[in-house]
Length: 200
Ligand SMILES: Cc1cc2nc3c(=O)[nH]c(=O)nc-3n(C[C@H](O)[C@H](O)[C@H](O)COP(=O)(O)O)c2cc1C
Image 1 (tube, protein in one colour):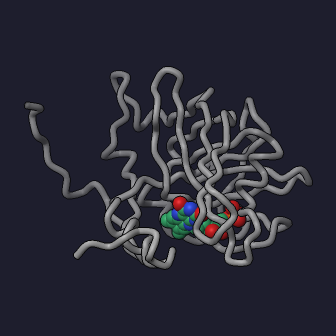
Image 2 (cartoon, protein in one colour):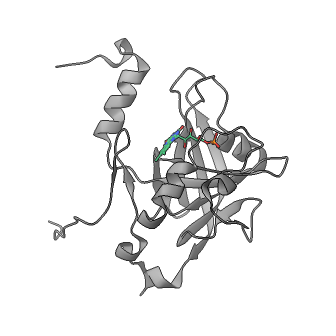
């Protein structure tokens, strides 16, 4: 079967993409509105793109009514955000924080998480997370206003808050971090079925 991308409804392409590019890491983004309301939401269109400088990126698509997601609006307003590790032990709270709430509602409260003011930027982080990146906005690349159009948010990590329990010999102990990945629909993966392979 060969499908021509521009002949397919965007929802069909979306379903193919999330089934194909999987598992995806999860950017659990903490931001604050100009009115001072904390915001938290997960985004699985996420990865890192440079180590020097350390650049991460994730993408928000518009709400069904066409409005920007709160995360994007807040980042455009404040030019900063935190990324909080979505460990398996926090997965229910992570999912709850994806609720479509209006900007005046705080997903930290809604998901039963503790918001802490980040030390260096105007954004909250998840106290319960084992790893937090403080990021400053580099740029937003927008792919339009149509349904499904991404807004790629590129940020530079300025500070890393790492729980001592997951950091040994300069490396993250990913077993202890226990990250989850997003598949499609309501499916997630863990790293509990991993294997080692020598390069070459
Ligand atoms: C695991 C997971 C991954 C998600 N990934 C994305 C994503 O990559 N892009 C996106 O626009 N929405 C994604 N969502 C949906 C957003 O989290 C949801 O729209 C949320 O309400 C946005 O919140 P905000 O308006 O406070 O920014 C995801 C939801 C879940 C549960």
